[in-house]
Image 1 (cartoon, rainbow, N blue to C red):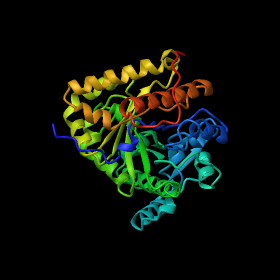
Image 2: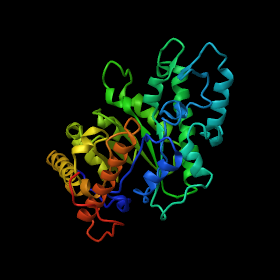
Image 3: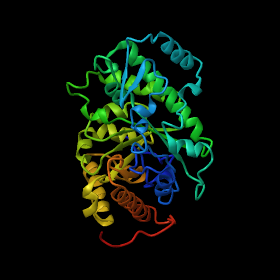
Length: 363
């Protein structure tokens, strides 16, 4: 395998990166839950229990041509005259008019609170995280009036990628006001079905969709998939981070050891979703999760991925969104995420000075 150079983002090693939604309904409580634990990389949370407009598909739907919200349902009604909407979208795309991609307060209350200057960071952040639903998942979930995924409509498919590109770029520009180093996570749960009959896309076509969304981003960009997938497709994009459910699916990476080694060799970062985002978290401890992660590192190292790269270019996260959990369990997962991060930083960066020491106790 190619020798791995020093990562240009070594200061991010084993820091926690949280993405997805939280179960909180109060914006201030959600921000407190995150900033009190993860000051290094602030991240705005989706709050789908506060409003259905904040689920991961509706949240990015504003101004999409023909989009219709009907009693909680969301679809594209092609019976409408959508030519004007398409014209506005493509004009914004051609002129790089990021204002088209604005996400209003009704669709992202926590982001709006940040943008208004109502959130005080505890320290100067190393990076700030944004998020968007990816084109494969968004295009499969949003259907037309005949319940056909719009990703299989040639006109709509191209519009999906352009629309999400502007949403991602607008968000990045807004977040860069608070920290110059941005991380934009593209959330792609449907990629877990890639290669099956339910995803009728070629590898090259899928890569092109990602690259269209990435094209206007200036900061770090990542892809998150919550299950097993063809990881070789994702690492062939220009993504900087690859986030995965390491609690249940680390073995799915073994068959792609060569491709992952090349990804790390170009400075890529693996985000290990080692903290289970569900009831298994109740029976796990910091020690058991660190041990599970290190077993995963050994598994990938035995497959041929350089161990030093795996250790130097890793971050951690919960295995998936916490929005479906109760608040108490969600915050327990956040606690474990913080504590595992501190333990790993102490273990692999002996000169680091973490802000607190994780408790050495079982829960």
